[in-house]
Image (cartoon, rainbow, N blue to C red):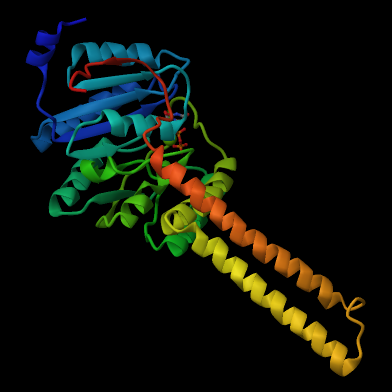
Length: 330
Ligand code: UDP
Ligand code: MG
């Protein structure tokens, strides 16, 4: 371990550009990926770093990454204790990358590092988020492309963030903005949505895409359903995270009003139609609606309490670091 002074001497200036890559069992891909990135970022003539997050790989990925980081100080490496998932890896990427511009991409050679330049230019133009759009995506149609298209359309409708390809990992962000976004579960594809709600200027550029040559995909069709559930959470947290009582309380009031209407109908039917109240199914409906209404308002109050706890405990990390290499300005 270097001493504190040598630490300080070696302390580098913050690089302008960080390229962040999550890695999980990509031993055949890493070296090629690294070479391609170097070729792509050198011509940009800016200071850069490449941050690899080894997400608990069981193959030789971490070993190869240690070799690369040993020979190139621009390569920063974070090694997880176990597999925490792509979102946690990206979250660590955000925590450890120090660039003013942060570019994410996959480490399986499916994204084309040659596109980094185009994303970079858009950020320089003044955009805060530049989303890659795999116009000619090289994945299976039925299990990957179709569900993804449907999900993207739905997300665009619900959130108002009109991007074609949220699932494309190749994306560029202004670092300051990205550092304000907290990630949970498998939420990384919603980063542009979170950013948009913070007021980010967003655009997209077409990027290349290659079929996977080595290793295999870590995901299947199940992910689509997870994305849909995430959409509900994101929408709720985004729009109502500071005022959940409006959603639950609003629904509660609505149910109470329906309950009242149903009660009035029961009484009127008794007076004018001589319909027995206790034999009138509307009475049961009244009781149900009133109970539900009261419950909804109570859930709203609980949600208000929860949301306060949620906002106060946000510095918790969703991962555990075993080791780092070349990271010395933290
Ligand atoms: N990945 C990861 N942790 C995981 C799963 C995936 O770091 O638990 C990485 C993986 O190494 C790759 C990227 O996330 O760089 C995307 O994964 P994959 O290529 O399997 O997804 P697909 O391209 O099939 O959507
Ligand atoms: Mg892939």
